[in-house]
Amino acid sequence: MNSYIKISLLLFLFVLNTSCKQENSNKQTLEKPLDTVKEVKHLNKLIVEIDLVTSIPDDIKLIAPNIFINNGQFMDVYLTQKLNSNERSKKITFELPENIKPDMILGISFGSKKVKEVTVNQINLSYGDLKYNIDYKEINKYFRTNKFITYDEQTAVFKTKKVEGSHNPILFLRKPYLDKIQTID
Image 1 (cartoon, rainbow, N blue to C red):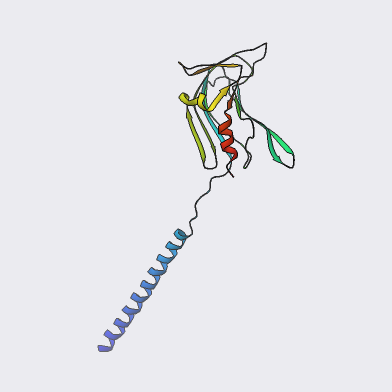
Image 2 (cartoon, one colour):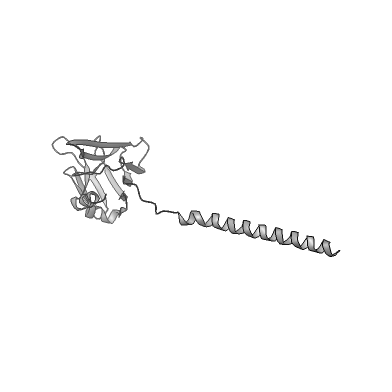
């Protein structure tokens, strides 16, 4: 009987020792991925999100002409989001290709088909770690209008108009904010 107890005790110690080693090995396996987690870097993509309401549906465009690429080469970027005939409000997202950032001009066209009223609820603009969350009260701080738009500060409504038979209403991002985008690598 004595040998039975010894064998049982040895077997118990062996199982206990093996399970402890396995538990420690599991702990190490779980800890390793946590040690190798790296900080996620934001992609250098210009993303412009616009939440707007319009009296007449039209094509909303993001305009970024004359972007310097390299070796004296330039590129014009025009992205279009079509609003269906029954859409009066929409959240629109425009994305430029990675590492493409506007040099001189970044504009949002309200569409040239018809004269209309547009309310911009919010514009979110981001590039890498840079983010601007612009609500309707701050639009004039970040954007300027061209001659085809008047802005009613009381109602926060942009009213498009024809000038000399032409109609091309565009909001342009102000230069200091464009320059800030240029400083990001």
